[in-house]
Length: 400
Picture 1 (cartoon, rainbow, N blue to C red):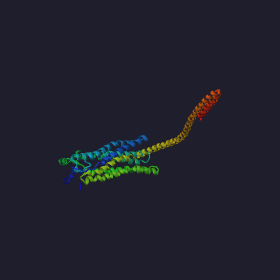
Picture 2: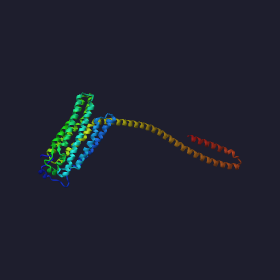
Picture 3: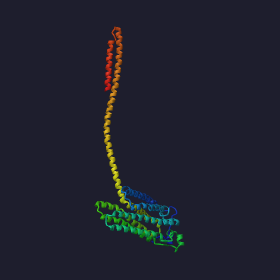
Picture 4: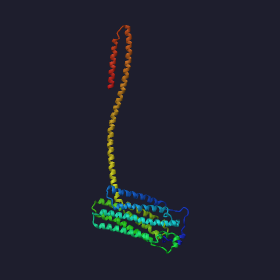
């Protein structure tokens, strides 16, 4: 079955709109871009930290990646709004004409932002290769890099201009899906073959991705580094081949939209998924070498800090062991002192008791002496001796 933007009347009359419980694609793409966009910002932040703070060698390639956040943010916002407000998540027959017109305007904006974002990323990657190759290998590699930059720039110029001049007048790009406008202006506007234009642009984009991912192979082959390091760097640069896969899948799901169905809003959903993945993950892949440096330095600092904390903990443990021994000795001394205090108290009570008994005995002896006529001085000697003895006991108790 043919497809495209202009369904015949027989197809239109066969559509059965759902006025209640309208099916939709859900929030999948909105959630996807809500994850990918913050991820891109975090990755760019880590890249700039590695280049500006750690190595202090930021270049034009880094500036282009930072600039790329502007069109990428616009792309994510437009894609999210298109899904929930402008009919990208519904069948074409469940959308109003005004909604379909808005969806075409968003499509133009998304295509324009996509080209700005992906072209900026590709040029940034190629400039990074130029930085690596300058003064290290032959000039032929640099010529390949410059040629690739020219190829990307020419691609952008041709398809960017074609996007805005493909329809005359320009409003025909989005108004042609309005059945009433299309009927009234039949023959008054001209538009290019949009399906062919989009497909060719996507094919060239994949070719550029393959070139950008293949150039590091030549660079690593001619660079004199250990084989293990070559494998590691090859893995880092090889992440970019995922973008080639995304580009191919985007073509696979884009071609049927223009040539096999008239339900473009509904059937374009998988293509928009790969569209979002390719544009956002391009920044992640372009920043992979800087992320490798960032995580390497961060892990080294973290391991160093952990070793310092472990050493400090061991020192504290040894100190606590020594403190524990001292506390044990101190505890023993406290127990001994407490025992001595109790002994002194008991001894003092005993002395007081003995003294009271002796005073009673002295009083009885005085009474008896008065009866028999014996001088009391002779009996007071015993009391004095006893007092001296008591004082010596108390002194020994305190000494203990």
